[in-house]
Length: 290
Image: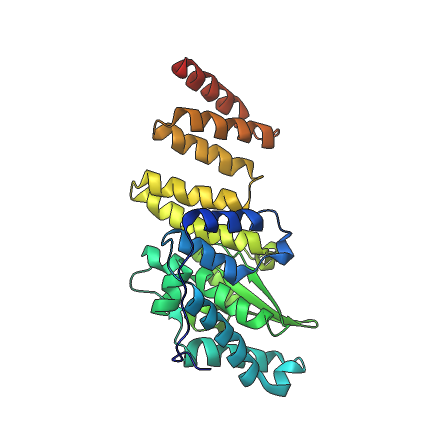
């Protein structure tokens, strides 16, 4: 079946149904999370009732075509053949690339719109590359590199770091050092933590954080709060996220919700140095309500 083949699109799911599914993801172990499938659900929150069948079909085509082009060499562990197959599918066949011209466009962090436009942020594109690679049984991980999300492909003791934003270009130590210094200054130096694998939940949170940061910068506080709440569906035990939600509720004069969120932060983050400030704020908000 080609991408041009008609795909039956039933009615999309409403926001409550999407939130239930994301809440279930929040209870799953990290390795059990369907990375691309969950990213579709997050994007659908912005467009409830939009049918997802053709997007899921596209994900299946990425998997099928990577298997077809990978061949015996990739199946046998040839790292270069695996990289070539991924580039042939994601870049050459389907035209995925980083959006250099309108980098901050919110569409670049929505997997629905990334699939529509074939353009996106590094982390959004990485999700597609990881989906195609992992479905083959290949060892592929996200790399939460400062300022620029990357992926790591490995067979045995050999590994390569790729930049999905720039066509899957392999990056050696010199290129990585340049990226790091551009993000953190000339004094920054590469360490093993810069190559560390990033879990599925952390990848999804980074994807959503891109949206949240842009909305906060634009002063869209209610939209930023909605994005933050989607992050809490995925990671309900993250104390700092609850604190941030509480502060946003306070700015929006949602006093009861602010108290609940800050109380949750105090419960989940017993060692956080910001606890005294949060406790004082809760007391202030309770006094205002009374």
